[in-house]
Image (cartoon, rainbow over all chains, first blue to last red; front, side, top):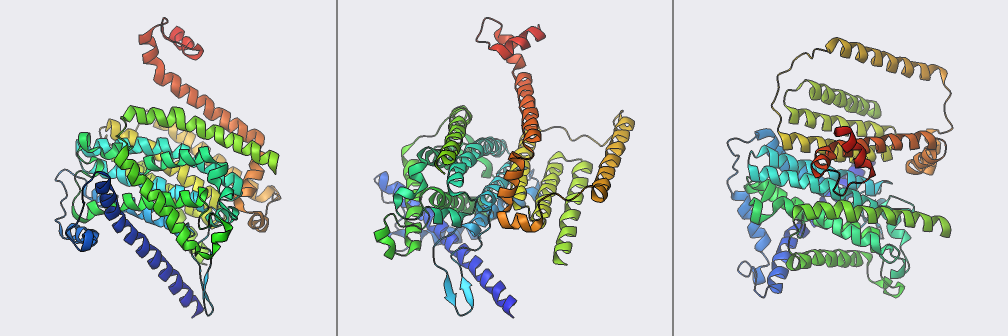
Length: 338
Length: 189
C-alpha cells in the first residue's frame, strides 16, 4: 500500500513537471512572437483570444489535425522515430532540476520540489542532451532530401563542437560546489548574490551562455535550420505532429539550458539579498529563468546569423581554449583558498 | 531479484545490439544498434553503483564517438556492400579466438587469485562514486592514466598530420609551415 502511494506520488510529480514544462513551451512560442513583434514595432498575434493569448492552443490544434506526410524515398522507421528521439531527451532532463527549496508535507508523504536528486545530476543532463543530436542527424538523413541532410550534418558538427566548451564551462561551478548534484550546487550559493557563481565564474558563465545557444540551435547559431539557405534544415520534410515534436523539443531545450544556467551560475532558487527571503524560492527560480529566456529572444531580434566556418572556428579556436584555461585557474584558486 | 532481472535485460540487449551491429548490412542501422549497446552498458554500470562511469559512457561513447561515426557515414554515404569473407579471415579468426581466450583466462584468474582492493561497495557509497574514482585515478593509477592520455595525444597528432598532408604539399615550403609539418613535406617529397 505504501509502495503504491509512493509510486503514485512520483507519477503525479512527473505529470506535474511535464505539464508545467509543456505549458511553458507553448507560451514561450507566444512570448517569442510577441517580444519579437514588439521589438520590430508591430503587433504580433492578436486575433485568437485577448491579445492573441490563445494562439499557442490554436497552433497546437492546427498541427494536430494536419496531414502526416512521409516522403516517398524516406526511411520510414527512422523517419518516424527521429522526432521522439529529439523530444524525449529534451524533456527527461527536467527530472533533476530543483525548482524550489521547501518540500511539501502531506501527512506521511513528502513532496519534493524536484523529481529526483541524483548525485551526478549535471552529467545526467549532459548525457541526455548528447543523445538528442541523434534525432536531428537521423531525421535529416531519413528524409532523403538534400536540405534535410545538410541541416542534419551541420547540426552534428555544431553539437559535437559546442558540447566540449559547454561541459568545460560547467566544470567551474562543479569545482566550486564540490558536487555534481544540482540541489547541492544551489545550496552552496546561498546568502546573497555575491555568493552566486556568476560572480566568481564570469568567464564560464559567458562561455556557457554562448554554447547553450549553439547547442539549442538558436539564432545567431541556427545553422542547422538556416532558412535562407536550407529551407528549414533537418525538418524540411516533416509535417503535422512530427514537425511539432521538433518544435517542442527546441523550446523545451531552451528552457532546460536556462534552468541549468540558473542553477549553476545564478544561485537557483536563492534570493539575491538575504532580506528578500520572504518571497517564495520558486518565484526567484522562475524569474531568473524568464530573464534568461527573454535574453535568448532579445538576442534573436538583435544578432544576424554567423557563417558556418566562422561558427566552427569560433567554437574550437576561441571557446575551447578559454574554457580550458578557466578550468585550470579555477582549480588552482580552489586549491589555494581551501 | 529485480537487480538480476535488470542485469539480464541490460546484458542481453547489449549483446544483441553488438550482434546486430556486426551482421547488419545497412551501416546506419549498425551504428544505431551500437548506440543501443552503449546505452545498455551504461545501464549495467548503474546496476554496479557506478553512476559516474555510466554518465561518462553515454557522453563519450554515444555522444561523441558514435555521433562522429554517424556523421562520417552520412557525409560519404558509402555503398551498402554485401557481406563477404575478407581474404584475411583466417588470421582474423585466429587473433579473435586468441584474444577471447586471453580475456576469459584473465577474467577467471583474477576472480580466483587476486585479493579484493581497499574499496568496498559500502566505502564507495559513503564517499560518493565520483570522488572515489577521482581519488583512485589521480593517486594510485596516475601513471597508467597519464600513459593513456599520452597515447591519445599521439593518435590525435597522427590524425592531424594525415589530414593536413595534401594541403601542406600544395602550399610548398615557402608558405607558413611550422616544425611538425616540415617533417611531413620532407617525407612526402
